[in-house]
Amino acid sequence: MGLLWVDYGEEFQNLVDRSWEIQTGDEKAYFDRLPDRVKKIIYRDTRYNVDFLYTAYELGEDGVMENYARWLYRLMEGVVSKKWANYPMEHYVIRHLEYMKKAVSEAAGKDKKAELTRLLTLAQEAVKDEASSEEAPDRPSIYEPEVEAYLQALLDHDMRRCLFLVDRFMERKIPVDSIYVDILAEAMRRVGELWHHGKISVAAEHYCTSVTRVAMSRMYPAIFAVPRKKKSILCACPARELHDMGLRMVADVFENEGWDTCYLGEAVPPDSILKSIREEKPDVIALAVTMPQYLMDCEKLIFDIRKEFPGAKIAVGGRAFASTGHILEKWPVDYYGENAIDLIRKVNGK
Image (tube, helix red, strand yellow):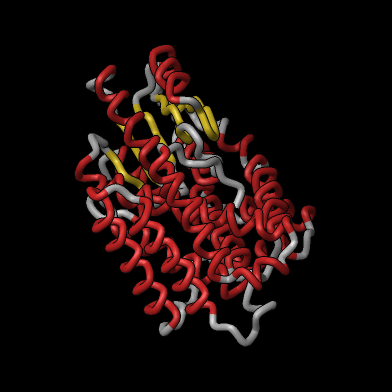
């Protein structure tokens, strides 16, 4: 995972270090055999685990830690179990979370110990539940043959065929919005699942993303030829969020509806977003978050926007919100979209 670290103070950094010390001490013989490169990866992953624990604690969202634990189990099952075929990944992940609980008991403040321990216990239970359940099969898209054809072209590293298919979709008069959401976005979701299960590499996933960006550009002549409605939307991934594919699709779908877009892209500093709002005066501000640990960045930005621009229309979306329960009831946002089509329908009052 190519992520930017969450900022937190000494207390949570101590949890990272103490978890690492407890694990390496308890499994000394095993760690003594590991090369330094692998040790660094395990330490990095310990930091990621604490990032999610910190996020769940600060936001008061149990689902952030539970969903992460399920995701981590499936990742480990797909990638590491190939090397440790006789060792159940359920036990590995639960044991790792147990090391974190021990670290909490030693390094966390008294005001946090009970809640952090509860969150880690919930995570362990989520792993057990995930290990005993079967994954739900993919729900067929309304354009299933098109999704399968495009996905196979991606996996074959056949860029020309990907572009040819998009051209064919347009020739067949499939709505641009549907090409974006029901075909390309669905294919990329499945690419992410293949990476998650260790069936393709990070490099392959990045290749699929790059090709899909090019494929999207094939539709730009038609998109930008649509008559303008004198409405504008500003789109940004706040602070450290690096995943902007879904946000790019939102911008393009709005362009296809006649809106003008100010697309700022990934990892935009909050001050720059506020400055752009002052200059552009958009009708809607769309913020996207994929990784849950960046929800706090988004939360702060939303309240800053609302303070300076009390009448602004703010929209949010992205996979991170699937891990939350009532967070949108606490934030002063106007719209939440599950995808680009859903968002523009809500903005249009449909």
